[in-house]
Image (tube, rainbow, N blue to C red; front, top):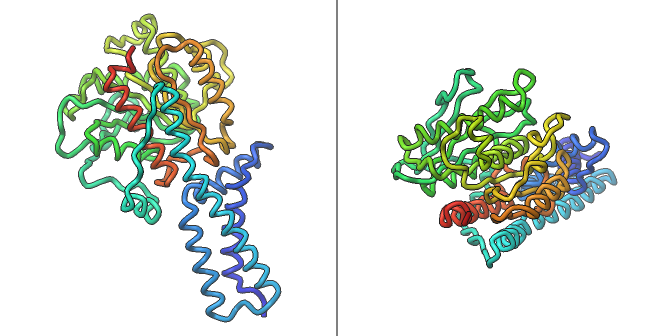
Length: 382
């Protein structure tokens, strides 16, 4: 008897994805992109893949289909892949202590994120898609400018609508050429809204029709919208934290750093207070598409008046190397008087915030602790 084709296909697919999640080659570029797309889901949800693989293996044994050398070879590959999935799960569990150390180092005091409750852990393992809590409502597609769907934002708020709450502005990833307001970091927005924050996730104009000046103008316009209209949704426009993923982190960093400089704020007609802090997830911190000049690179724009930063990156990121975040953090720490927290997550790939996972739950906990410290000290004690 030959190996069952369905079982072999299942094992081969899971083994392929597990291998790229474990190894994650960064060169050549084509292979780095293949590694990203192949390993992303299993890297964040190895438990479900392990259950699927175990069930498929149990089924072929129950049906008596393991009766040939080829079938036994497939079973051996499934066993080896299962070991790899366990290793991926262990990497995810290592995120929390790494984040705790990053917060403690940044704030200069012991910090410990809360341990996840068993019910929350089971929900994360069994339901990886971010599901909005019942206590949170989303007001979708609010215009903040005149560029059609690229100038729409969503507001996430608690249904009780408490007033005077801090605001979180989230900027999406996509390399400035794609993406949108309803893709990444859903679990982060849901958590903060459930805690009473008013969260805003916005689209912005994209390349090639827009450049860096337009991206920054859009981000400033979103913050200005929060300051002008946020009170209707319960937000205190004087306390705004900006966050972003990938290109959104690049934009959030530029916005946070420029917002501290009076000349740039005056040029942007921004008369509100500077942003309270910035959260950058797997961000790029170099120059914008080969442009020169300090205004295009967060690393080149660091200064003593920078707000508190939390920078989180994966050490297996094949699209934006972790070294890029290290350089930015090093430059920022040399001059900034505010807390700079930097966590490099073991085994994490780019876009680790698309799904709910043990790793991203730990990141959300860390962002919550970071933001609470910032809010308590009025911008990190600046």
